[in-house]
Structures are given as C-alpha cells and as structure tokens.
Length: 334
Length: 127
Image (cartoon, rainbow over all chains, first blue to last red; front, side, top):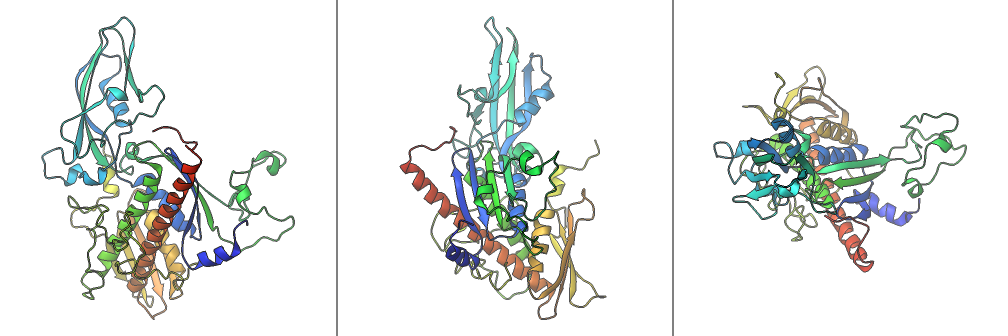
C-alpha cells in the first residue's frame, strides 16, 4: 500500500475515511476506506434509489399533431432531468394539503411549439418553460448540458404540426420510478486484483492478459506470486464513481445519500426508543423518515448542528443526540 | 394492471408500524424484529454490524419474498444486554459513522476544490 502506515493506524480509530480522486460538475470519484462492505453498499443503494429529486409526473396534452403518440411523448417528458436544487423544500404531492397538486408540491412546465418553416423542426428540453410560482428560480428547470444548449430532444415536427401541453413535475424517489434517479451511474468496485476471489474471471487462455487491470489496480498492492490465500481477508477499500444526471451536483448526491440513510436509521432509533422515557432521544430531532408535510429535510436534522459548519451533519459531534458516541472502536469495527 | 403501486415499497400503510419486536421464546435473549417497507439497504447493514458487536451472539436477516418490502431481523445476545438495546446501539453507531463519512467527504471535497483552483479549471464538462 502506498499509504502512510501511521495514518492508517490513526484512521482505524476514527471510522470511515474518504479520499477523493476526481471531482467536477459531472462526477465525483472517491475511495472509501476503513468501512464494512455493507456500509459502503448501503450508501450505494441509497444513492441509486432513495434520494428525492423532481421529474415530470403528469402531462396534459392540449394539442398534438406530431407523429408521436401522446403517451409516448409523456414518457419522454418524464425522463428529462430537471434541476432539483431546493427540492427539500418541496412537499411530496401525497403529503400536501391540496386537492391534486399546487405550487407547494409541484412545478408547472409548459411546452408549445409549432413548425412554421419548410423544414422539420426539433423540440427539445430547452422549449419546456417553467411557469407559475416556484420555490426558487432553479427548481424544475430542465437540465441543459450539451454544447448547442438545446437539452434532450423530445420530438420533431413536420411543417404545420403543433404540440401544446402542460406538465406537472413532482417530487419523488427512484424506488418509485427511475426517472427520479439523481445519478446516471454509480461505479462501485473493490479489490481490483481479485485477491479475495469474489470474482471468478472467465478466460480463454490467460485471465491476466484478457482482463485489463482496473484503474484502481495501481492503488493497491498486486498479489505476490505464490502467496497463500488469506481466508480472513475482508474488503476494506471501496471505489465509488458517482455520476450525476444533472439534477443534483455529484457531491450533492453523496451528501444527500448520507442524509437519507441517516434519516432511515434515526427513524428506527426513534421507533425503538419511543416511550422509554429515559430522555435520551427527546432532544430536537427530525420528524420520522418520510413522515409527511413537515418533514424538514436537512437544516434542522438532529445529526449535528453544534459545529456551525454548513454541512447538514454539523460539526464535531459532541452534544448532538447521535454524534455523542463516536467511539465505534468499542463496537468492534474491524 | 393489477400491479401494486410502486410507492408501497417505501410508504408505510395505514396503521403499520415501522419496526416491531417479537421475543422468540424458544431461544434465550433472542428477538425477531420486523421492519416494514425496508430492504437489503437496511437489513444487510444492520445484520452485518450487529455481528461485529461482541455482545451479540447471532444476527441475521431475511427478506421472505422479493416483492414484499419486509425485513425480518433476528438478534440473539449474550444476556448482558437485550436484543433491542443491541440494535439501538448499532443504529446509533451507524448514524454516527455516516455522519463521520459525510464530514470526511466535505472536508476532502473542500481540499480538492482548493487544490483544483490552483490548477485552473479541471477536466469537468459544463453543467
């Protein structure tokens, strides 16, 4: 290993350690050390499926003379990534007091295009216009990342064809429908040299020649020839590659993922210690996970708050209900 | 057509409790916890970390049917603490650990951005 052994010893007592190898507006690559595989995998699963974002959920078509069927267009609209900045202030429609949807639980977008020229015309995400009241000026705006600045193509119109519709974008999670997924992909790997033999690499004649080494192979020591198999070895270094679909920044996906899983676990603690009356958990705490309209995601969650730094998890632990005992050493972390 | 609504995977039904404990009478210091609307994310995480606790003798989870979002978690302790206490302890440790991870991540990210500013714009695409 090319890590300082002293630092490793230090880390052992501190819990999970992160090393970021790349961070830009599209992806963040990081290595998670000193954590259990279930710990890393839970984070991965939550980032894939349970981070709230916003996507078009209802489409009212007023006029569609294009060649595509209404439901086909509605499906395409649903898959367009929308900016989810500030989605924590948006309510879930099912938790809102309104009849069907309102400005507290949805963002309205309209699309009206008519081909008046002689050539076919492309209608793209850029032509979707958010209308009406919004929580902030970015929430629900279609994501445009391509060079031409048009965004994803929705449909094409021949001369004289017209499309006119109104969309309702709602908050949701990818467990309900993949259109709410914040991440385009999450790379997750460990043990690049397959020392643990979790993989059985198929090969024609020589697996070494046929399987190109992972980009992380140089981060870990290659196996020594003739080394006996270590039956007690467990994976300890996990390599994440979180790529955003555009709706949340990649580091925001990681931060939100951590928040969601903490809320899940905190909800369980709350349920289990309810009515015990020892006062241990009567302090300020976020309402139960997914509990409804007043779920104040972040900002006043119970994990933190004393550090005064801006991360939702607050600073150095200490007086927070959960931060108090950061001594996982005793808990038998390996 | 008759597929259940997808949100039934994560929204508790009317009157449903998130977690219920059933004491297993045939085994000493053993409880079954039924977690509703949860999956491997929580089940595997809890079972694996309970096993690391020296006071826990047995911990395992199962998801009876892939279409049913219920996790059954069985915990047996050595008698010094009861299964519920063991579970709460592990939950608290995990919340703290994820909090630590979040702080570490933000710290590393800030360092990274600080370093990148020196090199000019990174290799990132535009958003």
